[in-house]
Amino acid sequence: MASTLHKVRRVEGHDCTLPQDDELITLYINGGLFVNLRRKFRQYLMVSAANPESKAVLRSTAQIRLEESRHLRKYYHMIHPFSEARITWEMIMIVVYFSLFLVMPLELATTLTPALILYLKFVLDLFSLADVALFFFTGYYDIKSHKVVMKPNSVFKSYIIPRFIFDFLSSLPYNMYIQYGNAYHLIHLKYFYLLKLTRLPTLIEYIRKFCIRMDLYSYKLSTVNFALWFLTLIWWATALTLVVYTTTNGEKSDISENVDNFSPTMESCYQVVKSFMLVAMSSIQTDKAISMLFNILCILIGSVLNMVILAQVMQIYRRHSSSRNKYDNLIQEIGEYMNYKELPTSIKNRVFRYVEFKFQKNIFKEGDILNTLSKILKQDILLHNCKKMVEKVDFFKGLPGSLILRLVTKLRSEIYLPNDVIVQAGITGNAMYFIYVGSVAVYTIHEQEICHLEDGSYFGEISLIINEPRVASVVAITNCEVFRLSRRDFLEAIEPYPNLSSRIRDSALARLKRTQMMMSQDQKEKEKEKDKDKDPAVKKEFKFLE
Image (cartoon, rainbow, N blue to C red):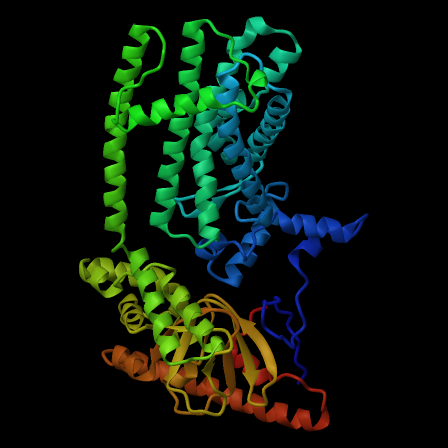
């Protein structure tokens, strides 16, 4: 009997002997000029497995493949929020926004802006306008629905209402027009730059994503955000102080005349910090009423600021015992233990990879959490996670819901790393497995690769009924979480259903008989055809993915 070679998707790090399936991108870009360059560019705009966010949201190779397919089929001209292109652009915009928040206060505090700062600000404004435009072509991750939204209408609505107006008005190069168009009667237009402060949350979001990619932790990120807000407040208050001083004293402030002398700026900054930290009153030489008003505002702002600083310190201390920090402590303890045991680097890396995949960089006691819930809620959670997988098994179809629930409660989670052998051919099996997340490769007893199985697939179901050696080996090729159903737990679950038990057993025996007949027939054909490279009996056993 001839067997068909099924193409499989390429998995990074796995030396696959099966025919590789064509990349999805080649189906959409299959000719024309610069075809390779266009494919690379399109791939650059699609979801990237190297992005930590995609690993958190799309946990397996199969889910990433589905997301790629959805992107190309429905939203070809959109940019995926978990793409390499988006990572690169956000890193550029972090530098741009930092530069803007440094330059704009100086520009607001002066009547004439030096040419260098003017052109620098113009370039930064162009990047800001480009960022505004890209928001309309970039999907976003909806936290409430836990889905990546790529529909253009939804993306447009999510950005146009709350943020577009502020972002657009604050990005226009007013100063360039005023200074080179001699439109000094419109000098007050440059105060629209104050709207740029509304981009500060965007900058913080970019920094948050950058910290995730750099593996910085949540409490450190919170400290970074607070420091950014604090420094921005100080710097902009300094610029405001300069504006008040020059306006009140009727003096022309021109940085171009004092490029190498920033003593007025430093003096203003010193006065602002001193007042905000409630060390002393400001001593700015200006109108008495304005000086008193300035000191009152500084006292109010400084009081709130000091309370925020204290709250921030307490929050950092409290987070020291959070689930994320428990994970950090666990990693440190594991590292010290492995150093003490003088384990090789290869084993250390596998241990760290196992812990990271299992806990997803957070530690929580699942048993304690489930114990706080009612029995009905716990059953609902289990059914949500596992019911569809169990019902895919041929001789489980049509079983009553009560028995399906009993089977689901017997499942036990196990984690395997790449190259871990889950089951071994020739060894008697006593459990079946459901793949929750990950990909595995199936090999014959002669170590010939047959196929790949991914999320939602299962294998080893005949071992629940019949005590026979396994006909194939299964090896993890990515990080895998599987649910194991042992023969003992299975028999205990179906014990109250003697009629169903005999039906399932008859179905399994008939399935095994067919498999053995096919294996025998295939063996005869192998004697005639030495180039036979697959076992159709094993294909039947493992229910290949087409």
